[in-house]
Image (cartoon, rainbow, N blue to C red; front, side):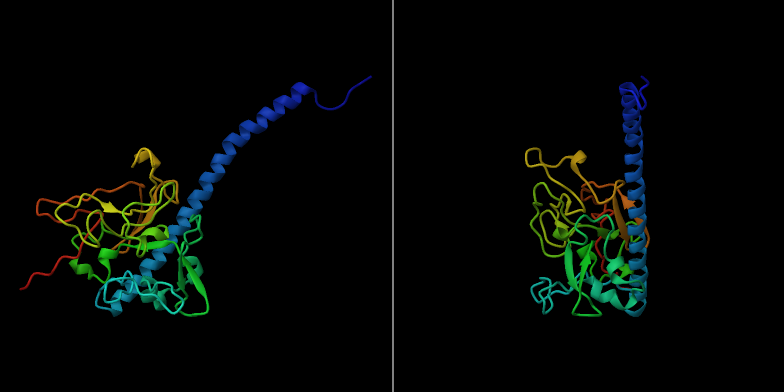
Length: 261
């Protein structure tokens, strides 16, 4: 009697071949997805850069406010209890739909900061990008290295507004650079590093570890520089460094007072 169909050996060979192909195609697919998401995220940042540039034309070449603050310096909130952020400053200059521009497609939370839609207060927007607070409202001419200074990066909510606790949540992501290790919004002579660089993780047993830092994207953190260009930086803790004159070195910057003539 003749037997039709595959033998056990043939089935095993096909199974091994499928696994081998999957081992190649799955990582390749994930890489292609990451490339697409990274590209879309950089496109978002370019749209934000265009809006900021238009804002600067109308407001004396000043950068937007990181957030609106009350008399104590704490972030103001609207009637719904949501923060009033830099998005409100540039809302009239954004050409594309906010729901696309403000959310990084690789953000696992889909935008961890909730804000009120500046054009329709009945709607809520989600935000994936954090603003480097020390540059809030600064004039571009007062920045020593605007082309090297990070202004906005894709991040989680922990560092975008008022979470000033220098210890990030264990076993989870935290937010964009907001302050320094020993002072709020400004360095002191004893400052060693900028805290809350998007996006990092901490091992409770081992502390900071270079191989334990992660970002939304495989290649690193997408950032918008103060001069308007975008780039991708490796997800690492950047220590605060100063030049021979004591000025903060890139990628962080502080506005410098203009010299009187």
